[in-house]
Length: 266
Image 1: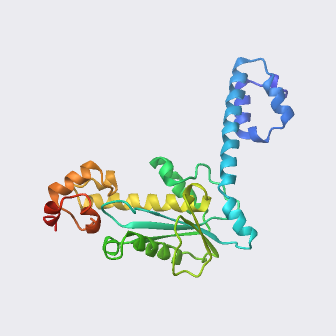
Image 2: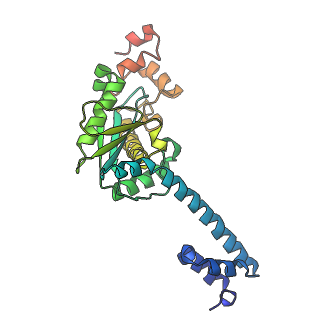
Image 3: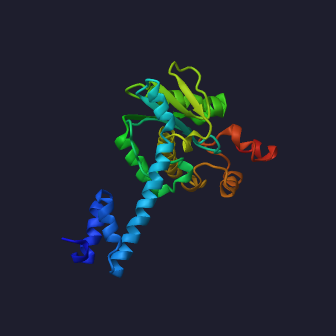
């Protein structure tokens, strides 16, 4: 059947199911349909295809570090990232992810750029498609005793140690991880430049957010479900009013409270 003989609803279904598979000649014929309803459907399809093409180009650009690693002979490439270096409370959480070659997950990006609901969906896509993934954590006590950088590096080593199969090459957001024998490449702002680091960023963020929401029930009054332990004005006010709990980082709290108040918190 020619396009001009097809009902508008049938054309809409066709574009939804087979739009990207239609030939240029078929799309040209469709674009010349005189019916207003068909023109509207076709224009919507063209806009959606342009967005898909743009997203595919973005994902291709985010796969350049992985492609270069594979060109060097590495097959199992892990991305690793952390979440929670800045909060006043809660652990620092890291994630390590190995994705299969040519993995394309639309919308994957630095977790800070992704809305919470979308992050949850991407989390499930990532862990569902990953070759393997693992989470590492450093506790509040380790943060206070080691300092936040060393605790973060410890959590990264724990995440990498949880991967099976083990990675052959590691892409890291910003830092170099000491104490691992695996070749690694630190990438400044890597969670926006590497698809595997972005995947790790999302897994770490969703994992830590869920933990802080659970902690909210154990330590009420601080708003952990909302602020995730960060130093919001409401959180600081709650600290001044209630004192600290076991989840607070003692070395971080003193930066926000005057010394007289600080002494009364313990």
